[in-house]
Length: 217
Ligand SMILES: C[S@@+](CC[C@H](N)C(=O)[O-])C[C@H]1O[C@@H](n2cnc3c(N)ncnc32)[C@H](O)[C@@H]1O
Image 1: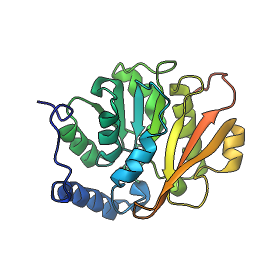
Image 2 (image 1 turned 60 degrees about the vertical axis):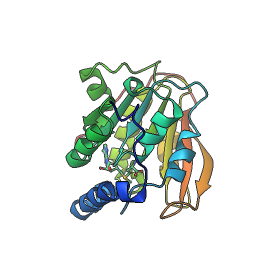
Image 3 (image 1 turned 90 degrees about the vertical axis):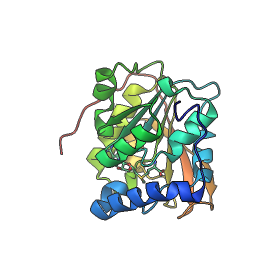
Image 4 (image 1 turned 120 degrees about the vertical axis):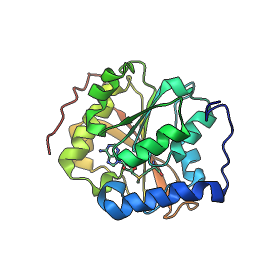
């Protein structure tokens, strides 16, 4: 029986090992993890609430222990229509155990287009949203830019990137949004997260295709 069909326990006791795994990864690489602990279920619900109506195919970036993954499946996204990318190998293994029917790729969000192609996950017109748990604030601009290029190369026209931040404003700088012709909307915030978090939604102003260019670092 899969994780999707079996309702997993969501008690604090059941989540404790995953939280510990997350914290250990933070000790190893605080910059990449960008948070001490996984997001709350309330934040996950706020993120998923921003999916366009009728969304079917979704990509999740930086899934950590899978709080947003769980919320996406609960929302009705089929496991086969979800692609999850996680840079940290230990967390990617944990995600595979927790969500055996979901395609979990241990890889870098900058390589999204290539990685999706390698596993036959069709991108472009068919992807309805990208849900991101990435810590953009901790990333240098060239990496932010490379990830945005990959995201908007993968997304269908007018489809959103849904992102949260702990900061007081958009985690992506204005000049980068202008350069990529992206619009941003502050969607909601929740105090029921440590720390409190705000959800932003980014969409392209034009429908000319974006080409993903991997910035070597
Ligand atoms: C702030 S944590 C969020 C985890 C989870 N989404 C949550 O909200 O609890 C950021 C996650 O992004 C992953 N990550 C960081 N850089 C990445 C990259 N370039 N590509 C894919 N995942 C990345 C980290 O390993 C970490 O699991």
